[in-house]
Length: 254
Image (cartoon, rainbow, N blue to C red; front, top):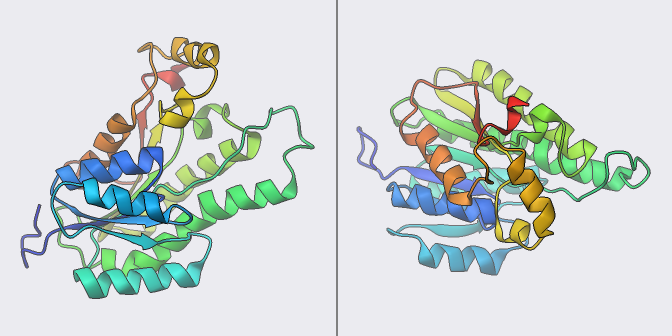
């Protein structure tokens, strides 16, 4: 897709772009005609391989450690220089670890700080860094921030207590930023329930079946479905901001 004023091909930056969900998002965005910057932290080789598979041209893999605000500022500057702008920011970088909710001692301070620094502060820092570019976007509806949230932020069931809290914070931040950055920038959370990534497929089959059985549609979300939702927010839902878009098969219905 192209912007109406300059015919510059629209550009999307995806943090955590080389992961199971991130790579599907990048693929869907590229299929929609955007040039994609695959942001990575420790997955440089996976990000480069992904870029080679994306349809279209002009894609790149770039370091995007979301816990390093200075690095994000430098990334935004390089994207502005090399691409002439940025139209969409997808905050997909995230960390967690399985800890039983009742096991408070195993949810130590180091893990808590890591989750909050990446899942919440990192998303905010990325928006802060890319705001000047996003404000100049000529996409219909303006520039777009998509925060990858989780049904865990709603139902408080997930890999650990702090992960759930981080996604609730992310959803709240989505609403605050949508109000603060309007009308030039839209901000939306895409909130899947458990996604059937390769990692999830490697887990206990009985547990996966139980999670699917708790979902009214009877299965888990696919990464491609999450990618399609993100793409729709950017390209189609041009009057949508400050909302939490569930991609959960009805999992949050209770």
